[in-house]
Amino acid sequence: MEREEKPAGKPKKISKKFYNSELNRLQIELVKLQEWIKTQGLRVVVIFEGRDAAGKGGTIKRITQVLNPRICRVVALGTPTEREKTQWYFQRYVPHLPAGGEIALFDRSWYNRAGVEKVMGFCTNDEYWEFLRSCPNFERMLIRSGIVLIKYWFSVSEEEQEKRFRARMADPTKRWKLSPMDLKSREFYVDYSKAKDEMFAYTDTKVSPWYMVDADNKRRARLNCIHHLLSVIPYEDLTPDAVELPPRKDSKGYVRPPIEEMTYVPEVY
Image (spheres, helix red, strand yellow):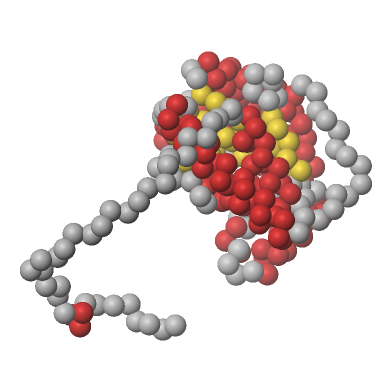
């Protein structure tokens, strides 16, 4: 698959005002897309992969922010259990695939085997190569079944990743994001690059291509990713018509309990 070359030079920063305005516009379109997916019974899987601290979670958060959690859900699986380790590799992911009218956003996915498991030695060499052989066939099977599969790779430079790691260390509300694996990834930066290149060689297919997101600028990455997502799924505006609130019925004879008997949260603020 041919890729467009990245434009030379550093792009201009996006102002907060423009970012918020454009994000709001795109989120309105996401709501329209959600209604279309629900009405048409589509099954959509979006995979978010990439470097640690590349901004996958922030983009997912902006997508789900305005959507119905019963329709659009995030799949972020933890470490496999001892039982899951003995299953067919893709088995633990299959139950999380969407039904008709649903969107599943995978915050990391079956590609763990070609990334962290390969680099950190959590799988054998045979298991790794079996994954690379099986994955394209698995994804073709999903697509033939009618699932819309979209794969994003968030790319971040070594310098920007280091900057974000340090920012997380300094912020108590973000420190939980730094797992031992994240810290190890600094040591194996080149190994992850090699693993990603090998993974792309096998799994970047015409049927199921990878879409690269330049994530050095978080605002730009979020807008570009959401804009692209909206462009790859044709949809129509099925926004429901505005409704009028009906008048309330009279509460004849109903006496509410005294407010003093209620237990309220203390008003500290």
